[in-house]
Image (spheres, rainbow, N blue to C red):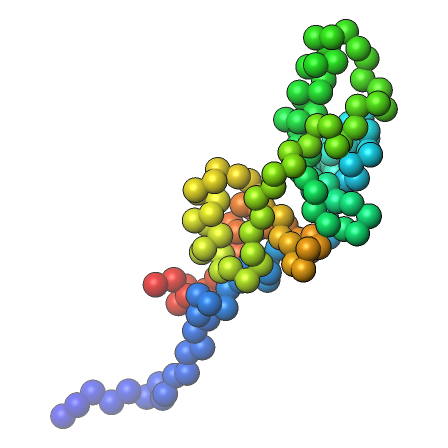
Length: 154
């Protein structure tokens, strides 16, 4: 005689890896900077908002660079070295990193993990049709991973 199962048929909806996209977890509301912003403005903004950097965009919201705490520290160091006080003449455009590595929002979070591990970056801007649309950070990926159901992991 066989075993009788009284639980009935179960339907398991399994999220596929393909459905876990960066665009579902990226930050869309970003603090951005303009190339003509002063370094002092950037430092105040970063401290006020507890961020370590941000995208630099032009008037068309096209990504033209990234400014970070490290870039600001370099400006402070140069100011001290040359004995020139920090003022509004030190602007983002002269301090930002211009060659910015971006990531495609249609990648899965698992593909993003590999990009993070390969590049050692903490965040990637996401650009669509030439415009900045968001940013994905390592923290966003960790939050996404913790929210996944057990049956998603293979």
